[in-house]
Image (cartoon, rainbow over all chains, first blue to last red; front, side, top):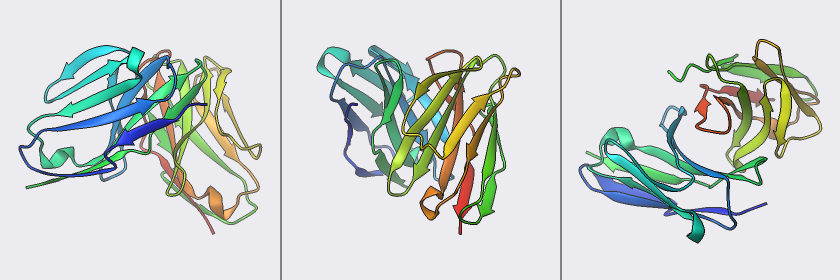
Length: 108
Length: 111
């Protein structure tokens, strides 16, 4: 299998601040996804991003597959951004590996 | 609302029992995935079905089994339950191996 490591494990922000979350993976992967788990437990797909950069409103993500990492940028954070952010990698076309998550707390 | 439905929302059962969790994917999605989320193990991939066939297998115990039916809904069967099986079980669906959309989860408590 592979190792998927996320950093930082915990992040506290003041509303309006920007942040960068990182996901490192130990081997080449077939795809990479970012998810947000809100405080009520719902998992929401943010990005499907095996390579390159995508943007969706205040969120954007970049995956550099050759260097085995992905970044999730959150700009002008809001309290509704609080929760846990997971990255997940598909390896060898047959197994998904999740990182342990970054827990984000945005304070008003 | 992701369009993926899971039933039941909560389930409380005793050790040694067997339960069935049900998932209905988004309309048009052929792939269904099952995940387990527990406090000590985090999110773990269990199994994927694509159009009725098993496509990928993760850390699924032998006491657990799943299937996908012709109407594309899926069931996850958990047997000989142990206290450590208490967790949130998520189902997700996708068109192929692309973006996954998660259901609300089933919270299983084994007493």
